[in-house]
Amino acid sequence: MSYLLAFLGVMVPVGAYLGYAALCDPDRRRTLRASKAPSAPVPTPRRVVAPAPPTCPVPRERQVWIESSMLWLVAEFGLATVRRPVALPTPEFFPVPFTGERREIRALLARVCSVMQVDPLFIWLNLFDGPSSEELSRRQDRRITLGRYRKIWEFSIVSLDRLDAAAPAVLAATIAHELGHVRLIGEARLDPGREDHEQLTDLATVYLGMGVFSANAAVTSHHRGPVPDRPASPRYMRHGYLSQPDLGYALACYCRLRGETEEPAWADRVHPGPRRTLVRGLAYLAHAAEADGTGRVFPTAADPAAAGKGGERPGRLPDGAA
Image (cartoon, rainbow, N blue to C red; front, top):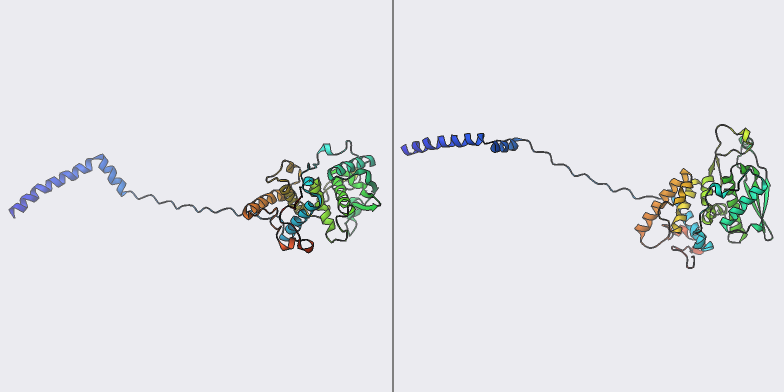
């Protein structure tokens, strides 16, 4: 027992001294404080959500029709046609001055003929006076004819509404549509009895280089009548047989055939509505081509609904199309 008491008498002072020394040591105090401090919360890793793939900007039915019809135009006119310069509504395109006189309209017709590869010597120009904006506002049926096409022997008669000359770009779009009839019906490429021949004629204006004019004119706000009688607020009219989204996506397909995978420089001449569809269409076509990997020009090229007569509709560019 005496030994135990002697051992405790030695160890207790030693332990007290070591404890005091530890408390006086600044490094030791820092360690003790750190051990007592609450631990920092472990950050939860963020969940990265992949962006949704781009989708086609037009309904499936319209997509199939536009893509299959563009391939039909490739087979009819070849790829060399689609790779020609794009006509743009710049001041240089229109005759100067342009006041709507017959000779000026004839000069504009000749310029559109040059773009669409039509011989102007075989085109007869006829002008007629259509209803003004005020007359249209009083009519229940506000649909009007802006242009007409007829063929006599080897000549084509293109009739134009004189009031459209108030908006030269819209008049150029009308001329392009009528010259589309010259290229399709006049050259016996298309049966005029086909149900969608008017829509296909609008699409042909895109393929033949006048697509920017057609897309911009799809919805117009110009006044049909004398300048002094123009109202303060414009009246909007639909022009042509294809909608702005249809024409915007057609321009995207047109770019795809031209090898333009990004928004082209000439897109700044396209009105905002069809331009948005053009940009979305380009993104969709690029994504679809990368995901598909089969070399098809358009996503629906192998779709049974895209087949033509007898089911033939090439999934890739036709042989000899270039």
